[in-house]
Amino acid sequence: MDEVFKALADPSRRLLLDLLNERNGRTLRELCAGLDVARQSVSKHLAVLETAGLVTTTRRGREKLHYLDAAPITAIAERWMTRYDRQRAGALAGLKQALESAPMNDFAYTTYINTTPEKLWQALTDPAFTRQYWGVTFETDWKKGSPMAWSEGGTTTRDPEQVVLESEPCRRLSYTWHTFTAEWAKANGVDEETFQKLTRESRSRVTFTLEPHGEMVKLTVLHDGFDPGSTALEMCGQGWPALLSSLKTLLETGVPLP
Image (cartoon, rainbow, N blue to C red; front, top):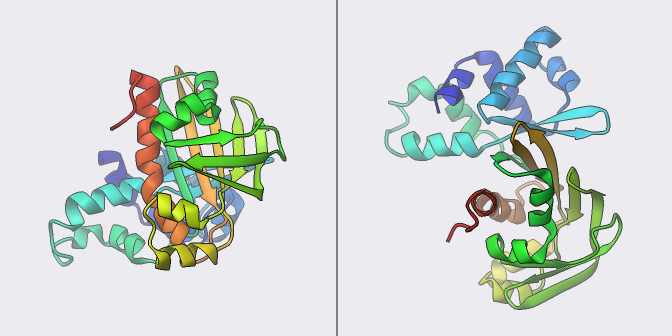
């Protein structure tokens, strides 16, 4: 938490977070255009933010894209902002601004897992693993362009648009999110009003990037393609941190979170 406060103490770094909050997934060049600061300085600021867990990165071809990771900010908000009134939290003005600004249309999350790329890949694709920490299994050969069937809560969802988008074993995996069906909603306790909102939204996609990091693996999850004000994003944003924590616990201890 000390690293988070240190990162937020600098106005240039807070401005970088504001820029990512306005539009996530920016390159270094795009971020430099929004700051009257040298490229090298922006790179150093981004490195501090990434170390603090406030920014996560992924690659698109030769470009490195930067995403705001709201998890550390949310943790601070839960610990401090709910315990003290807004006026007494004046020292966190930069954080307050970030929390109250316009919502993002992407979800990005980075975690470090004490495992190997091969085991992590298996945990992301093998039904024997996914049902333990996720309660979901997939029917697919995990080849680019292949269809996917999602099984969850006793129901199976099939749709021609549920496909594998990228598949580089032990490195990168991307696929479209599942179709929201009435059967899925009933099995997961989703009310009719929420279900109708979900059916009107664009289909999103999730991308997993696996990078060796010493004896650990850096896992970056990017879930994007959501509509502004997306109900699906709100639901997924709440679910991913717990799911990924359970995945990490399973690989490191052999038992997922309850």
